[in-house]
Image (cartoon, rainbow, N blue to C red; front, side):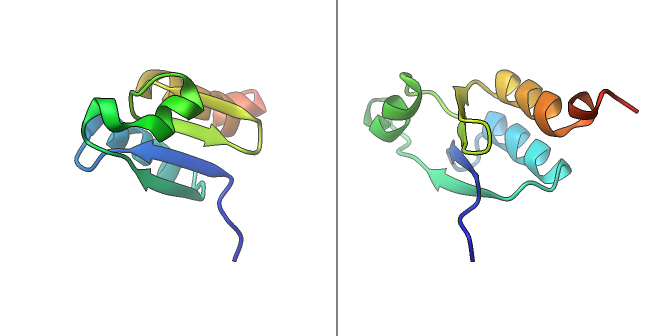
Length: 89
């Protein structure tokens, strides 16, 4: 079994994280969830990845993109894997 190309850094019961999860599922994208420390100051893995400690954050090995902020991630997923990627219907 191969490792998914997308890694999602998230918190349990985080509505912004769940927004990204819904979008990943909508496009049937395989992803790996990495749950991070609830204390903002303890999120060193996310800080090393994005330069910030905020979640959600993703790393997409397909494109080399790393980003945080749910709105930005959803827009990226739409443009990369959704209708925007094929020019629309």
